[in-house]
Length: 112
Image 1 (cartoon, rainbow, N blue to C red):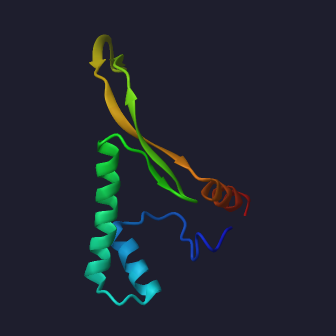
Image 2 (tube, rainbow, N blue to C red; image 1 turned 45 degrees about the horizontal axis):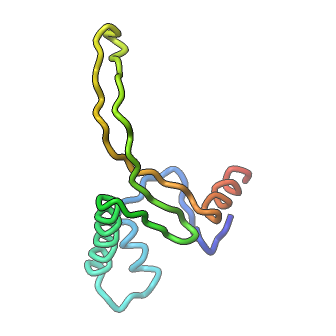
């Protein structure tokens, strides 16, 4: 496992923005307050979302690429009532393609 990218990796957990901010604060010995670190993390995600809404790609080197992708309209069916047809309108979804180092770290974790 690439310890440079993923030190102290915790498996089988959900990590929240608050936990990310706390970890960044504790590991950097930051000169800013914990609340300010949380605000930076929150704004980072807000800016990523804003860029995606505008149709931009977000490239985070060694991590991956986020991009908004258009999904064409389609016809769906409720499995409980197959005779009822549901028209699903066109919409956008976020796609993520992992970077090379992240893919390698995941593969190494699976092999361990």
